[in-house]
Every structure is written in structure tokens, then in C-alpha cells.
Image (cartoon, rainbow over all chains, first blue to last red; front, side):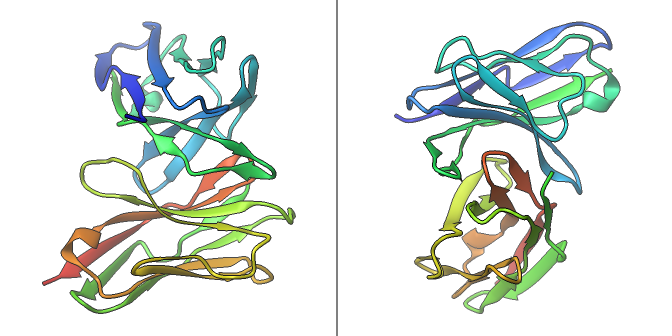
Length: 115
Length: 111
């Protein structure tokens, strides 16, 4: 079954405690990305990756890190989480096309609370 | 960041009727893609319809169709014969490798 998995699904942590949210896809997609969803703001792209070892900033990259060492995995790292990073996070993958990407396949979401 | 504007925070429609959701975007690019995604209460993001900017023909998927006006930078979604299962938040998205989403429109379907 084609899917994007994220772990954990729910996480409550404290300010400053480093954490990683994993993301994995089994569709051999070149493109992967991370989003955060906040009420009234829609989804905002944090980082995206066009292929292995190629990453770029989205609209809200501050406070986040990513890496793309393998095609299937794209972890999101919060080195020192703060309460304003409390949000719902989505990972997504898609094929890369000329001029953009194909349909995004989204993971189930990770609800993060930073106290 | 490209700006995507959904001017209707909420829309209500009677079952079996038609509702149209508006979306405008700002870009200087000529090649890009546009999408509508649906997010039901389960929070799962589901593709509704996609449109390639180089295609003049409006995309259609069963009861869902778009009105793509490239010069006006407008991309509205029409839901025909609305069903209770259409109740969800709908997001318009612009894609030229960086994706930008609108704030969303919550659609309520009245039985």
C-alpha cells in the first residue's frame, strides 16, 4: 500500500528538549516536504527536498532542521523546541514534475505540544 | 512566498445543491500547478482536484470542477450535488516546487 508514515502521532514535550519527528514514504518519490497547520493560517511549508541531499527552506523554517540522506526518509528536527512550535505537523511526498510537483501524499499528521 | 487567498472562511450548502469556493493567488510564474485539498475531521489531507497552469481546459473530477482564470489568477472550486460527506475544510494550494496554501474554507452541508 502506498503511504507516508509519521512518528510519533502525538507528542507532548518541554521547552528546549530536542526532538525528531520521522517521516517515511514507500512510493520512491523524489519530492518530500514538511508543513505545519495552525488555526486560521492553513498549512505553511517548513522545508522541502527535491531529492537526496537537496533541501531548501519553505516559508517558516526558523527553529527547524531537516536532512535527506535516503530517498524514503525525511526527518524533521527541533533542536530547542519552544511553545510557539506547538502545532499539527504534516509530512508529504510526491513526484517531481517540470515546473512543480504532482499530487502530494500526506502523512497522518503529528500533534506536537511544547510546554 | 506566494500568496494564496481564500476569502470565505465558511460556506454552508443544502444537500444536493451547488456551492462554489473562491481562491486567488499571486505569482509572476507562467508554469505552476494548482490544487484543491479536502481535510475532513479525521485531519487526513485528500486531493480533490488538480490543474496544470499550461492547460486552458478546466479540470473536472466527478462532482467537482474548477474555474481556472489564469490572467485573473483565480482558481475557484465548484461542488455540485453536494453530499453530507463533502463536509470538510477545503484548501487551495499553489505549487511551483514551493507549495503555498490558503487559510481554508469550512464547508457545512445541511441535510
